[in-house]
Image 1 (spheres, rainbow, N blue to C red):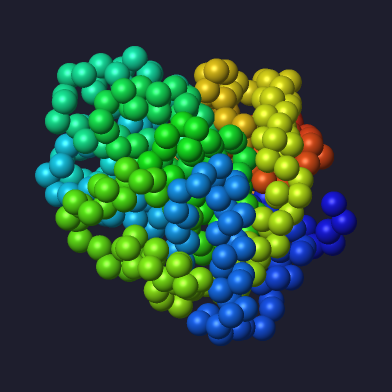
Image 2 (image 1 turned 30 degrees about the vertical axis):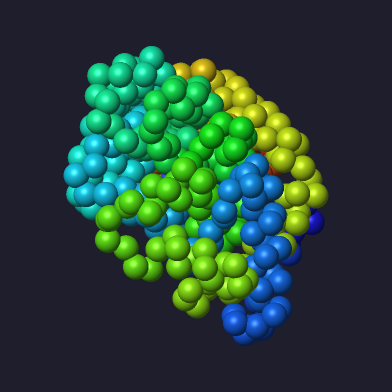
Length: 371
Ligand SMILES: *Cc1c(COP(=O)(O)O)cnc(C)c1O
């Protein structure tokens, strides 16, 4: 891949490593964000993002992390006291619901057992049982557990009811198929530092016609993330507030690369490297945490053998091998490790990771380190 500056094998689910051309774009001189060059750039990245989202819906760009985009989806389409169904199979699903709660929504939660996606029949029963529900919140790829939900099936069920579907696709967009229009997804959120291989700082949000109608009725308080403001400015090729200009330079380059490679190729590569990663993990005796049918194409979570201490393993990988993996989040801290293969990654980096884990565990056995 011809990059000289990749000293660390960064196997976390974002920020993902950025190719050299993307990093170089970040160092360009500033331009006028109210000028013509900017509006050309803004129109181009908006068009290319729509191609990745597979949508003709409006596509809004915010300067924020992914959470800002998720919050934008909530506050622009919902009202306090409104009944909302929050689907969750982990930390990010819980957080989506927590955001809605913090703005006053009346959230019913439907949780899947750890390692599973939410059962689609359970979604249907929940909607049948409670006709007051007006919106469903779902995380497509639950980064904390390495579970990818069957978003298409969930969307099919939600569409049988007159209910809005808000999707956190932060760690899936650009790596796992998300067919925004074909699946009827009302608001879809992602961020620059995951599947796009762009530094953190931008959130992207698509808004369907139905979501715009909900927006007109939505009474949650909002200012910075207001959709109407963002759209009015976007029509002039601008943003309401000063955007992260450098990140947009980088995004422009990254999107051109992605579309040149082709989405199907990128999706296929992720599926392949995910199954390769699971195979390598099993080979050294680690059990995948996510059920096979929910296994994420972008991140593999692994149960730790009883005698292995998560922090010690993670620190040894970083200190002795320059390999950075993730631990568990929330209640899974200390119980699992997570190896990301999102975006710009090669099998060599996966091989290195498991070779190093094997060596660390072997030397630990021979030294009887305290666990
Ligand atoms: C990374 C991530 C987010 C948002 O993260 P930020 O740190 O706010 O960018 C939200 N949802 C999922 C599923 C994620 O993986």
